[in-house]
Structures are given as structure tokens and as C-alpha cells.
Image 1 (cartoon, rainbow, N blue to C red):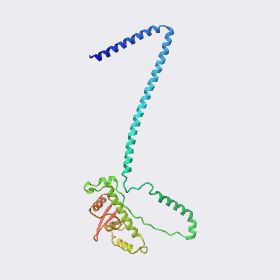
Image 2 (image 1 turned 60 degrees about the vertical axis):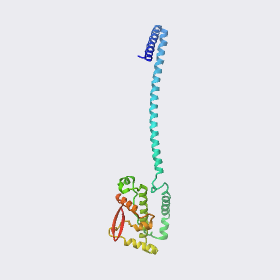
Image 3 (image 1 turned 90 degrees about the vertical axis):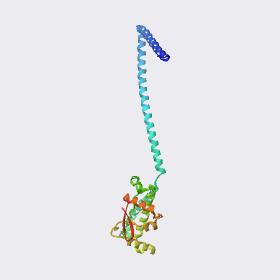
Image 4 (image 1 turned 135 degrees about the vertical axis):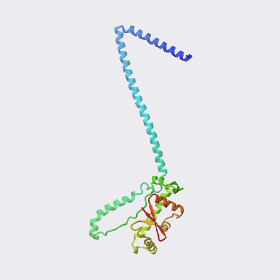
Length: 258
């Protein structure tokens, strides 16, 4: 036993002796009826204080648990904030931005309201309404992140997710431009557009009937894409993701939208 431990034992024994002396003194005091009543009141006060201390201890424990919970929530919030900032700073260029569709929707709603209000008068003045038929042009759906990750590395090479979806956007641009011309009446077209429309019709086959497709020449004429080896590689990636299929014939490769 070292010196420090010996002092601690000595102090402990002295404390016990002091407590015994106080108990003996209180025992002698308790024999006095007047002082005994005072001791009982003191005992009640001590018990009340002990109960209050127990309540404080439980309250402190609850506050400690609450503080730990709030710290965990703060960490989760910081992680969510970091994720949100990352998404904000790395938004794919093909994603629609807030407010892009607001104006057309509002205009459409106003137009519907105007038509409903003016319908009776218009029927009287113009007679039965003319039927209009507008063909909807199909577009490729953008590649999702899981789909991009599923593409084999040897096929992706150095092509990024944004580059592949930019190509999707360009193909959609070419398809839209082509079929707008193809769906117009011949009499409304100029000479150049008529020649294009005829070329589009000549490129159709029984395999492309009722489907939307483009060829390399359409990509060159309606977009800024370069039809090179990298573009061919991205077409392979789009076929892997089941966005396109190829139909060859007459020396022309047709890329059909799925």
C-alpha cells in the first residue's frame, strides 16, 4: 500500500468515526421529547429534499437524452443539406428547370376558359367547329443514372452521363424537326421542305411503318452533333439501354425510337 492509498483509508476511517459520534449525540438528543419533534421535522425535510433531487436527476437525464437526439438530428440535417447542395450544383442540363412549364400551363388554362365562355357565340357565328388532328411526335426518354451505371465500362469509355443525355436531346431535336415537316401538307411547304419530305418518305420501309426513326443525314442537318466514332459508340449505348434499334436497307441505317 502506497502513501496515497494509506491516507485515503485513514480519512475513510475518520469519517466513519465522526458519523458514529454524531449518531450517538443524536441518540442522546432524541430522548428529549421536545427535541425529538424537531428531529422528525428535519427528517421530513431531508426526505423531501432527497425526492426533489431524484426528480432533478431524472430531468437532467431526459435533457441529456434530448440533447443527444438533437445532435443526431443536426448531423442528419447537415448531410441532407450537403446532398441538396450537391444536387443543386450538379443538375443535369437536360432536367427541366423550375417555372419552365408555368407560362404555357397558365396560357392553356386561360385559353380553355375563353373557349368555354365564347363557345355559344362562336357556334352561332361560325357554325359547327372543324375537327383538327395533331400527330404527336415521339421522343427518346433520357437515360437514368442506374441505366448509365449498367452500361459496361468497355462500351462507355470516357463518355459521361451528361454527354449521353445531350445526345438523346439532339436526337429528339432531329426527330421533331423531321416529323414536323413530314406531317405538314405538301401545299404548305417550300421547295426545300418538299424535297426533304419526299426523302423522308422514300426512306420508309415496311419495318418502319408506324414508327419514328432518323438516319445519319437527319442528325447532320438538324443538329450540331458530329457523326463520328464517338457518336456511333453512344448509339451503341442507347441500344444497350433499349432506346433505339437499327434497321438497315438500301445503304441506309435507320435508328428507330423504342
